[in-house]
Image 1 (cartoon, helix red, strand yellow):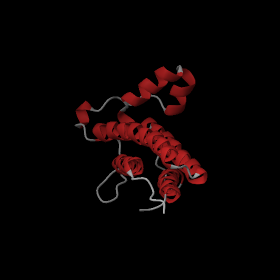
Image 2 (cartoon, rainbow, N blue to C red):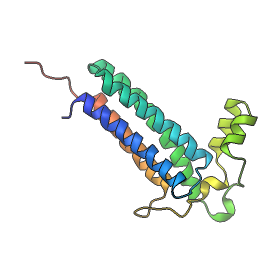
Image 3 (cartoon, helix red, strand yellow):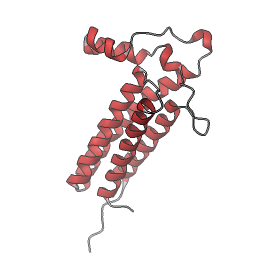
Length: 166
């Protein structure tokens, strides 16, 4: 088994790599992130920061479980958002919702909870894959895979047996 600190460092690197690749796609490839993509970035950032904090802290068994639970919650929420986007991307063209206002406009114009509700409903732009895919999976599908991997790592951290002292 890998040590707790290494596992949390892997979580941090997975999230940081995901965020870095998203920024690369935005800046270098010119792919504008949709509102659901922006929300997924927030969940990757939250999980990554918790992973870094846990790696630096080096918690004992109970602390490791607490960190893992919070990272797992972030992975579940991010996976839910990614799953919603994947669902939107696989709708027939005539059932895709109309494009809505952008993320910045929604956050500036509406109260926070109302803006988040509108964002999470998704819009036509969230159904567009931007033409990018790798191994036949879109960005949203890869994000969903990464959130599932994160959740799996957290479950392993929570379920791992106590260290044997000797």
